[in-house]
Image (tube, rainbow, N blue to C red; front, top):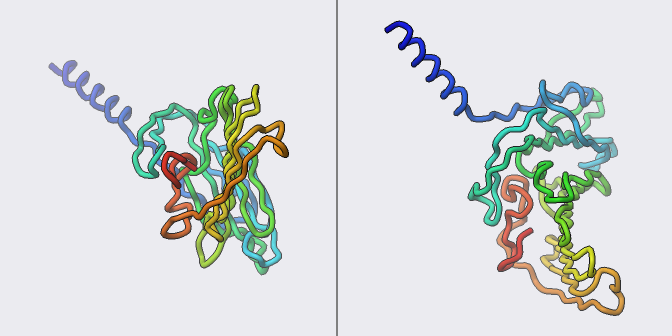
Amino acid sequence: MKVFCLYILMLFAQLSFAQKTFMFPKIKTQGSSVEQFTPADWTVIDQAYGDLNNDGLADLAVILEYDKAIDETRVYGDNSSAIIKETQKPRILALFFKDKSSGNYYLSTQNNDFILRSEEGGKLGDPLQKIAIKDQQLYLRFQGGSEWRWELGYTFKFENKDWFLTSAINLYFNQNTGDMTERVYDFKTRELFTTVGNLHRRDIANKKTSEVLYFSQLRTFKTFKKPWAWEIIPNVYL
Protein backbone atom coordinates (compact mmCIF):
# COMPACT_ATOMS: atom_id res chain seq x y z
CA MET A 1 0.00 0.00 0.00
CA LYS A 2 2.81 2.40 0.88
CA VAL A 3 4.52 1.64 -2.42
CA PHE A 4 1.29 2.32 -4.31
CA CYS A 5 0.79 5.66 -2.51
CA LEU A 6 4.37 6.66 -3.24
CA TYR A 7 3.86 5.85 -6.93
CA ILE A 8 0.70 7.97 -7.06
CA LEU A 9 2.48 10.91 -5.43
CA MET A 10 5.40 10.66 -7.88
CA LEU A 11 3.02 10.49 -10.85
CA PHE A 12 1.09 13.53 -9.61
CA ALA A 13 4.32 15.46 -9.16
CA GLN A 14 5.44 14.60 -12.70
CA LEU A 15 2.11 15.68 -14.18
CA SER A 16 2.17 18.94 -12.22
CA PHE A 17 5.68 19.68 -13.43
CA ALA A 18 4.76 18.88 -17.05
CA GLN A 19 1.80 21.25 -16.91
CA LYS A 20 3.77 24.11 -15.41
CA THR A 21 3.40 27.25 -17.51
CA PHE A 22 6.56 28.95 -18.74
CA MET A 23 7.10 32.30 -17.04
CA PHE A 24 9.09 35.08 -18.67
CA PRO A 25 11.57 36.73 -16.32
CA LYS A 26 11.20 40.39 -15.45
CA ILE A 27 14.12 42.35 -16.83
CA LYS A 28 16.04 44.37 -14.27
CA THR A 29 14.79 47.96 -14.29
CA GLN A 30 18.20 49.64 -14.08
CA GLY A 31 21.86 48.87 -14.53
CA SER A 32 25.08 49.94 -16.19
CA SER A 33 25.68 47.13 -18.71
CA VAL A 34 23.94 44.57 -20.91
CA GLU A 35 25.28 41.78 -18.71
CA GLN A 36 23.38 43.14 -15.72
CA PHE A 37 20.11 42.98 -17.66
CA THR A 38 20.59 39.41 -18.89
CA PRO A 39 18.66 36.87 -16.76
CA ALA A 40 20.06 33.44 -15.98
CA ASP A 41 19.56 30.94 -18.84
CA TRP A 42 19.10 33.76 -21.36
CA THR A 43 21.50 34.99 -24.06
CA VAL A 44 21.79 38.33 -25.86
CA ILE A 45 21.43 37.62 -29.58
CA ASP A 46 21.35 41.21 -30.85
CA GLN A 47 21.68 44.75 -29.53
CA ALA A 48 21.86 48.32 -30.77
CA TYR A 49 22.84 51.67 -29.30
CA GLY A 50 21.46 55.07 -30.30
CA ASP A 51 19.33 57.99 -29.19
CA LEU A 52 15.72 56.88 -28.77
CA ASN A 53 14.24 59.84 -26.88
CA ASN A 54 16.03 62.81 -28.45
CA ASP A 55 18.21 63.68 -25.47
CA GLY A 56 21.54 63.16 -27.23
CA LEU A 57 22.44 60.03 -25.24
CA ALA A 58 23.09 56.53 -26.57
CA ASP A 59 20.14 54.42 -25.42
CA LEU A 60 20.03 50.64 -25.68
CA ALA A 61 17.87 48.04 -27.44
CA VAL A 62 18.43 44.36 -26.65
CA ILE A 63 17.00 41.07 -27.93
CA LEU A 64 17.40 38.10 -25.60
CA GLU A 65 16.72 34.42 -26.27
CA TYR A 66 16.03 31.64 -23.78
CA ASP A 67 18.62 28.86 -23.80
CA LYS A 68 16.04 26.06 -24.06
CA ALA A 69 13.20 25.35 -26.48
CA ILE A 70 9.69 25.24 -25.01
CA ASP A 71 6.16 24.89 -26.37
CA GLU A 72 4.78 28.33 -27.24
CA THR A 73 1.34 29.19 -28.59
CA ARG A 74 1.64 32.20 -30.86
CA VAL A 75 -0.98 34.54 -32.33
CA TYR A 76 -1.50 34.88 -36.07
CA GLY A 77 -4.17 36.63 -38.04
CA ASP A 78 -6.24 38.70 -35.63
CA ASN A 79 -3.87 39.92 -32.88
CA SER A 80 -5.71 38.05 -30.13
CA SER A 81 -6.27 34.33 -30.78
CA ALA A 82 -3.34 32.09 -29.91
CA ILE A 83 -3.70 29.52 -32.66
CA ILE A 84 -0.31 28.00 -33.60
CA LYS A 85 1.78 25.94 -31.22
CA GLU A 86 5.54 25.94 -31.82
CA THR A 87 8.47 24.30 -30.04
CA GLN A 88 11.10 27.02 -29.99
CA LYS A 89 13.18 29.33 -27.85
CA PRO A 90 11.27 32.38 -26.47
CA ARG A 91 12.65 35.86 -27.11
CA ILE A 92 12.42 39.19 -25.32
CA LEU A 93 12.80 42.74 -26.63
CA ALA A 94 13.99 45.19 -23.97
CA LEU A 95 14.44 48.95 -24.52
CA PHE A 96 16.41 51.17 -22.17
CA PHE A 97 17.01 54.90 -21.82
CA LYS A 98 20.37 56.15 -20.59
CA ASP A 99 20.49 58.62 -17.71
CA LYS A 100 23.09 61.37 -18.07
CA SER A 101 23.72 61.99 -14.38
CA SER A 102 24.20 58.36 -13.28
CA GLY A 103 25.31 56.81 -16.56
CA ASN A 104 22.90 53.94 -15.93
CA TYR A 105 20.30 52.48 -18.26
CA TYR A 106 16.63 52.45 -17.19
CA LEU A 107 14.11 50.00 -18.61
CA SER A 108 11.49 51.68 -20.79
CA THR A 109 9.63 48.58 -21.96
CA GLN A 110 9.87 44.80 -22.06
CA ASN A 111 8.03 42.91 -24.81
CA ASN A 112 7.82 39.11 -24.79
CA ASP A 113 5.86 38.60 -28.02
CA PHE A 114 6.86 40.88 -30.89
CA ILE A 115 10.23 39.41 -31.86
CA LEU A 116 9.83 36.44 -34.21
CA ARG A 117 11.39 33.19 -33.02
CA SER A 118 14.05 31.20 -34.87
CA GLU A 119 11.48 28.65 -36.13
CA GLU A 120 9.12 31.24 -37.63
CA GLY A 121 11.08 31.98 -40.80
CA GLY A 122 10.28 28.88 -42.82
CA LYS A 123 12.99 27.25 -44.94
CA LEU A 124 15.19 30.35 -44.78
CA GLY A 125 15.75 29.76 -41.09
CA ASP A 126 15.86 32.39 -38.37
CA PRO A 127 13.79 35.38 -39.59
CA LEU A 128 15.47 37.96 -37.35
CA GLN A 129 17.60 40.16 -39.61
CA LYS A 130 18.28 43.44 -37.95
CA ILE A 131 17.67 45.68 -34.98
CA ALA A 132 18.85 49.26 -35.33
CA ILE A 133 18.38 52.76 -33.90
CA LYS A 134 18.34 55.74 -36.25
CA ASP A 135 16.78 59.19 -36.12
CA GLN A 136 15.31 58.52 -32.64
CA GLN A 137 13.48 55.46 -33.98
CA LEU A 138 13.74 51.71 -33.46
CA TYR A 139 13.99 49.54 -36.59
CA LEU A 140 13.13 45.83 -36.62
CA ARG A 141 13.57 43.68 -39.73
CA PHE A 142 12.53 40.08 -40.48
CA GLN A 143 12.52 37.80 -43.51
CA GLY A 144 11.51 34.25 -44.36
CA GLY A 145 9.81 31.87 -46.77
CA SER A 146 11.18 29.54 -49.44
CA GLU A 147 10.52 30.03 -53.16
CA TRP A 148 8.04 32.73 -52.24
CA ARG A 149 9.78 34.98 -49.74
CA TRP A 150 8.67 37.76 -47.45
CA GLU A 151 10.38 40.68 -45.78
CA LEU A 152 8.87 42.69 -42.93
CA GLY A 153 10.09 45.95 -41.45
CA TYR A 154 8.70 47.94 -38.54
CA THR A 155 9.64 51.35 -37.18
CA PHE A 156 8.68 52.37 -33.65
CA LYS A 157 9.09 55.79 -32.04
CA PHE A 158 8.82 56.83 -28.39
CA GLU A 159 6.24 59.60 -28.11
CA ASN A 160 3.87 60.66 -25.33
CA LYS A 161 5.38 58.07 -22.98
CA ASP A 162 4.68 55.10 -25.25
CA TRP A 163 6.14 53.22 -28.24
CA PHE A 164 4.13 53.85 -31.40
CA LEU A 165 4.39 52.09 -34.76
CA THR A 166 5.12 54.93 -37.21
CA SER A 167 5.85 53.03 -40.43
CA ALA A 168 6.20 49.54 -41.87
CA ILE A 169 7.10 47.70 -45.05
CA ASN A 170 5.96 44.30 -46.33
CA LEU A 171 7.62 42.79 -49.41
CA TYR A 172 6.39 39.48 -50.87
CA PHE A 173 8.23 38.08 -53.89
CA ASN A 174 9.15 34.97 -55.89
CA GLN A 175 12.89 34.45 -55.86
CA ASN A 176 12.86 32.77 -59.28
CA THR A 177 10.49 34.93 -61.34
CA GLY A 178 10.86 38.20 -59.44
CA ASP A 179 7.07 38.66 -59.22
CA MET A 180 6.40 40.80 -56.19
CA THR A 181 4.05 42.93 -54.14
CA GLU A 182 5.49 45.62 -51.91
CA ARG A 183 3.45 47.61 -49.40
CA VAL A 184 4.85 50.62 -47.57
CA TYR A 185 2.79 51.97 -44.66
CA ASP A 186 3.02 55.49 -43.26
CA PHE A 187 0.91 55.55 -40.12
CA LYS A 188 1.55 59.21 -39.40
CA THR A 189 -0.03 60.33 -42.66
CA ARG A 190 -2.35 57.29 -42.84
CA GLU A 191 -1.15 56.33 -46.31
CA LEU A 192 -0.46 52.97 -47.94
CA PHE A 193 1.75 52.80 -51.03
CA THR A 194 1.54 49.55 -53.02
CA THR A 195 3.84 48.42 -55.82
CA VAL A 196 2.93 45.35 -57.86
CA GLY A 197 5.19 44.00 -60.56
CA ASN A 198 8.66 42.53 -60.84
CA LEU A 199 11.50 42.85 -58.38
CA HIS A 200 14.12 42.78 -61.16
CA ARG A 201 12.40 45.33 -63.45
CA ARG A 202 11.07 47.92 -61.02
CA ASP A 203 11.27 50.89 -63.40
CA ILE A 204 9.41 49.45 -66.37
CA ALA A 205 7.16 46.65 -65.12
CA ASN A 206 5.68 47.91 -61.88
CA LYS A 207 2.36 49.51 -61.08
CA LYS A 208 2.23 51.89 -58.12
CA THR A 209 -0.90 52.93 -56.24
CA SER A 210 -1.71 54.74 -53.01
CA GLU A 211 -4.69 54.70 -50.69
CA VAL A 212 -5.85 55.95 -47.32
CA LEU A 213 -5.31 53.76 -44.27
CA TYR A 214 -8.28 53.50 -41.93
CA PHE A 215 -7.63 52.67 -38.29
CA SER A 216 -8.81 54.11 -35.00
CA GLN A 217 -5.45 54.90 -33.41
CA LEU A 218 -1.75 54.25 -33.78
CA ARG A 219 -0.61 50.82 -32.67
CA THR A 220 1.89 50.26 -29.88
CA PHE A 221 3.76 47.21 -28.61
CA LYS A 222 0.76 46.64 -26.34
CA THR A 223 -1.88 46.78 -29.09
CA PHE A 224 0.13 45.22 -31.94
CA LYS A 225 1.21 41.93 -30.45
CA LYS A 226 3.50 40.54 -33.15
CA PRO A 227 4.12 40.31 -36.92
CA TRP A 228 1.30 38.73 -38.99
CA ALA A 229 -1.21 39.66 -36.27
CA TRP A 230 -2.85 42.77 -37.73
CA GLU A 231 -5.31 42.47 -40.62
CA ILE A 232 -4.75 46.04 -41.66
CA ILE A 233 -6.92 45.79 -44.77
CA PRO A 234 -9.08 42.81 -45.85
CA ASN A 235 -6.90 39.73 -46.39
CA VAL A 236 -3.67 41.69 -45.88
CA TYR A 237 -1.74 41.04 -42.69
CA LEU A 238 1.12 43.10 -41.36
